[in-house]
Image (cartoon, rainbow, N blue to C red; front, side, top):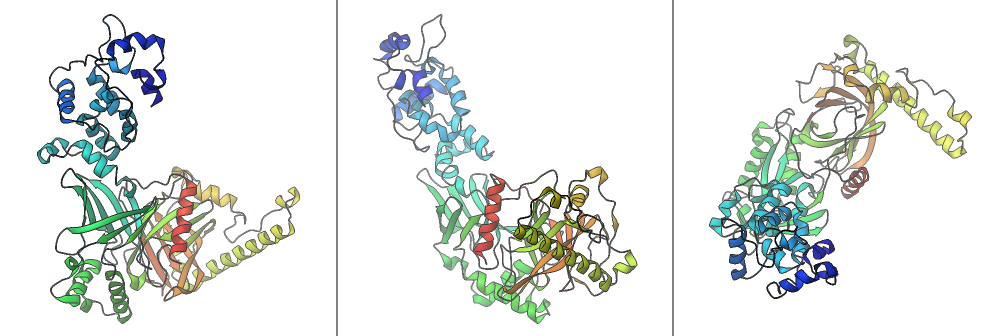
Length: 541
């Protein structure tokens, strides 16, 4: 702002001899060019109606005519921004971030007049928020592009992105986006069980828009009676809450029974009579009772998509996976050196949202037996348990070295104990061969079939895989009681699908990538992402 002040002849440069004469000539005509102290984007460019008409006439009407205070003497280059043509200043100001324009408006009222030009704010709406609507239609409603930017986009910019609602163990995935002249919160739902490869479903939970110039309107979209009055409170930087002010719009004429049947069709794509498993019926009814009590009055916490690296086994991201009677759930796959983690974004009463459902040890690949022996569950179990014992010994040796304080070069040069796969215990060969292998040298696919006795809700799993790793899966009793990690097999099928064999449960989960381009969801840093994982895990523990 100081630079702008010097350029236009006010502020710190007031005593400059070089501009003194020109400023004295302008002082009578431009006596209003004093600094303005308003910093709100909503007020940038505000002023009286007469000044608005004068500015519009000079800037947007026909051939621009310079203000007398802005015209420099003929035959020399302008010495300040005030001497530039107004249409050029519109282009310059329109290229600046919208958050900087209020400071620019404080420099002088000449700048403030120019910042009333809607062309500037139309460009900021498009470049900063991707608003591609024909904003000229706003003239019909009397809402300017500056109103849209200041009262809608800028005011609610902090809620754009991905969020996880606090719904007990169930969690969820909310994506808040700019959609036309609205800001809409879309709740993303997995496809109906067990169709893991189907696209995600989504429904609106709230929307924000400008009905008039005064302020933005928040509407709750929950229920089946159309938009109704709602409220949003931004609690802090990465947390906000929603509240419905007319929860009667959520009720149905047939009472709770009709509400349950409608929810069941939307959530599961079937009726209660179609579900013959008694335990599954209990889980479904429990979820309806628990989630419906919130009436769309929820608190949301920001989540980030995992950062990626060229050395990652596959691209990290969000996947939908099968979890037995609990149906399909959303899992975030992220890579952490020689480990990969699957964190639940949605959960269930056994393993709640936020918990690390699977962990893959990329330092310990598994060599599966031939297709005939793979059908034998005891053979697969033997291979996995041998690797589990190997991992346990390596961890004990590492703990022993740390206790002894042994960091000598001699100890570091000792050969590592060989795992059943033939790689070193430290996994260096595996990391280079499996995780960092170029795509054209990736391991050839091999036949794959589930062992006899392993249950899979999805019978259409791939029959070939790229590579398998030792891993552990988290299991627990109802209410997340007695949680423990049990051995299993991570199976990579392709870039978009993987599976996990739960050895103790004799069950198989198939995961498929969520192919949605989420905006405003990138983590600012690796540290911020790791901190987010810790926060959501502790929140639902």
